[in-house]
Image (cartoon, rainbow, N blue to C red; front, side, top):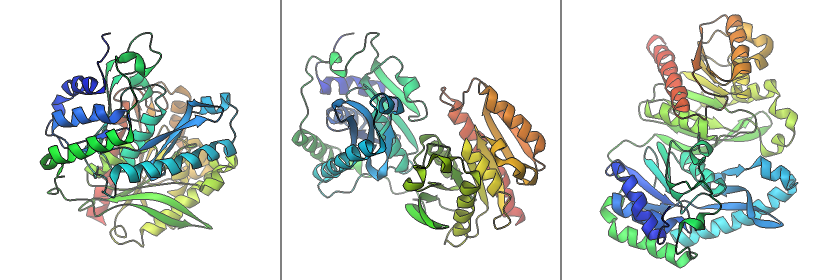
Length: 443
């Protein structure tokens, strides 16, 4: 490959690959510091607003350059479990590094934005730009932050990265654009003649130039109706309070409550992607943490289906008390273990659940409750997820209510293969629109 002269040169070349996005409601987000000079050139070519997406790597204490994860705004955290195990890091080690980096993250937010609000992403195309991808932990956190902030589509765009970059970001980014993937890739800097560090002052100067030069482009179109509600919420669930993100579009046709799988959270990029599709179709969504951070430390809680189902019921009861959601028909979307909890909760007499969708779910974990499921249920399974596929076939034979099994060809358990997660989202959207809209019509 021919090295880029510097980050600006890389940005100009990257912009050529992204020119089809011109005029399509794009916000360009640079990952500071090195990603911002690249992002500036992309934003300039697209005449799109430029903002920073502030994230921080979490480095192994005795080898800080080795990232075991990253954090971002809105409480997002991504961990590389393999590195955590290899470095023998315990919870205390992880939390100590995270505390330090959150202080630095907040400092950067204040320094780069200098009191200005971040550019809203709701319903827009977020193009996340860095100067290259090494481990990918920082960019994954960035994708999750953009999802959490309401981006309708997330595109990762970089000049250089490993040859498996598309596979690495499946489920995080809807599209990956990478100019160079050298077969002997060992560091981002190998792609540049000049790879000098970018300073905070340079980042601030570029953001100021973008505001001045792209002032008209950066004016966000307010003609489209914003969501009625798009906010973080706290919900009382039994003895604890759980965190969630509630989105209610204009003229909602129903609301879908998400139950995530083990080891995940309300920031699940896969669930967030599905939620974005549902929001675009006029359905409200509530993604929430089934467990508190303290409860998650007890691994047994992650598989306590009765506990998880009770949280779903409590949250559904709460929705029935909220302005804008009280009269809406409710659906459940469950992933992995969360699907088992959703099926159990759907049989609880305190709630009326009109439809259930399971993504790569474990309906067998619902146990005897399966024979009481009458809500129309769609079981979505990857064609190459053989064990889970058989479990879902067995569940379909037991569930007495309307139940369909949709097999996504060539997909594995996490639907990481290109196009498979989009298929899940479309199947779920059609199912909910059919059954929740029917509930509105028939009462």
